[in-house]
Image (cartoon, rainbow, N blue to C red; front, top):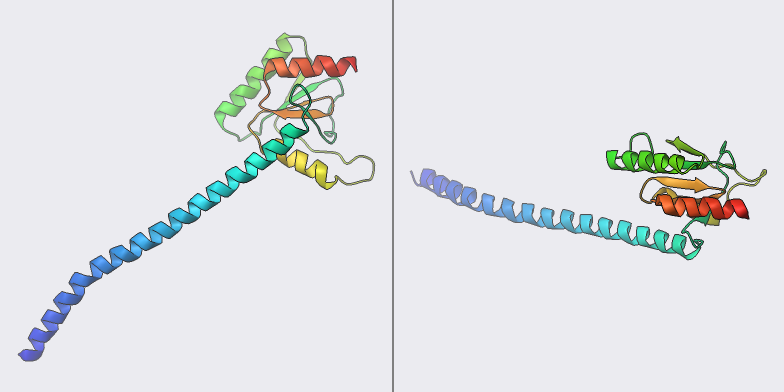
Length: 168
C-alpha cells in the first residue's frame, strides 16, 4: 500500500512539473530562434545598405553605374529586366516602364534575364562583380542603358540617361 501511494504521489508531482519545465524549454528555444532570425535580418539589411551605398557612390548624375557588357544587348536599346518568377508588382513595374519608354520613342526590350560578357578573354574583376551584385540584388526592374545600369529607375531617369549617353 505504501509503495502504491508513493508512486502515485511521485507520479502526480512529476507530471505537474513537466508542463512547466517544457514551457521553459520551449520559451528558451523560441528566444534563441527569434534572436537568430533578428541577427540574420540585421545582417541582410546591413549588407544591402552597404551595397546600395557603394553603388550610389559611383553612380552618375542619373543614378546609373558602369556595368560589364550584357551579352546580346543592342547598343542603342534600353533593356528592362525583371525575372520571370519575380513578384507581380515587379513584373507590372517593368511592363509599365517598358511601355512608357516605348511611348517616348526609346527603343526598349523587356527581358527576364541577362548574362554578362567578359571583356575580351579577361574574366570580370572583383569591382565589376560587386557592381553586378549590388545592382542585381536591388529592387526590380533593373534597367540597362549604354553600358550602365540602375535598379528601380523612373521613366524620366532612363530617358535622361538614354539621351545624355547618345550625345556622348
